Image (cartoon, rainbow, N blue to C red; front, side):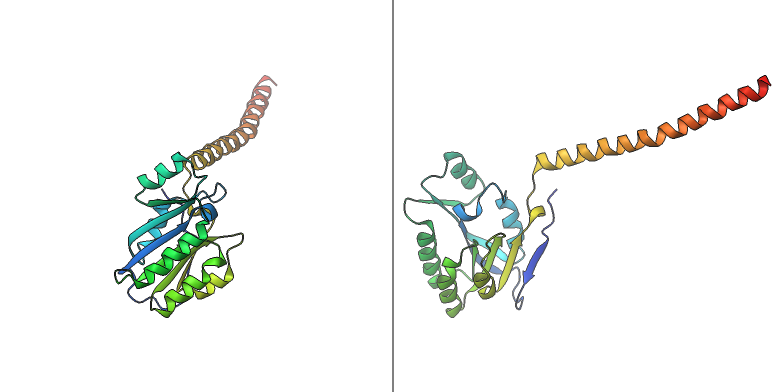
Length: 202
């Protein structure tokens, strides 16, 4: 059903994999864009390899549509709409989570190097950092500080329409190939039959 994730780059040790309590902070304006077509259920599925999401927040600006806010809520995440700078609010709350004893790992879904100070502070206090991002513009600085880096690539998302179109295209191409294969054989058979008839006539 899902496209496979092309790359999960584990940079350091993998202790307690699957047991961590994770706070997932999603930079909405940076990551929930049409060109990435990200499925939040898939993000949850990938993070389940590291532990359980106990806090899941999606930070949005005041231009976020009601439809997007509703979709985020329906997928079990908490939408945080701010009239100010989304990055500032997310960084502040990320820093506050450092002192939350119920959180082992803070996962930042962003491409933005603005979160580097918050990540550095979290590491100083013994928290693990997961960074989830995509190209173009995926900051190398935040990749290098993270314990785990998850890169979202083309086949990360599941797009039902694209899959259906691909299947239809494949089927029509196969049918065309079959037709092309049939025609020469049929012509050969016709020619062979005509030759036989002519032999009998003679």
